[in-house]
Amino acid sequence: MLPLIKLLCPTDFSEPAREALKVAVEFVLHFGAQLSLVNVVPMLPVLPRDPNYAFKVPQYEQMLNADAEERLNELIKEVTTPITNIRTILGHGDAASEIIRIAEKENVDMIVIATHGMTGWRRAVFGSVAERVVRLAKCPVLTTRVSQVEP
Image (tube, rainbow, N blue to C red; front, side, top):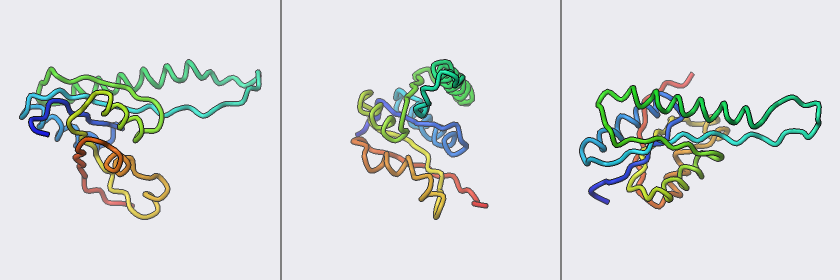
């Protein structure tokens, strides 16, 4: 496992994910590792084939991808320590499955992922991407957690 050569840090652009990125950057600086910053764009539901339905799926997907790319690049600019060995990857579909697929494809040494600390009904309803990644990833996974007060 050591030294770490390739790290993967998934982000949903939330505050916990930003904190996980800070941790990943520390590993990059310490080991001189390469960092892949990943965002997974959800798949769009199948829409009716009614010819009068005006929703343009390809254009909407292009907008989602462009927005995610822009936000990833902005997030890289927010990293206070300049690092050159960072790149962005866009995934599509189920977040946990895509993170695991990308980690295997990129042959990463470790995934650094945030947990949102949801408990109770929120966790039951929304599930946990981080939990699925921990259970299914073939490489080590470091989870980070920011203390949050639930309303």
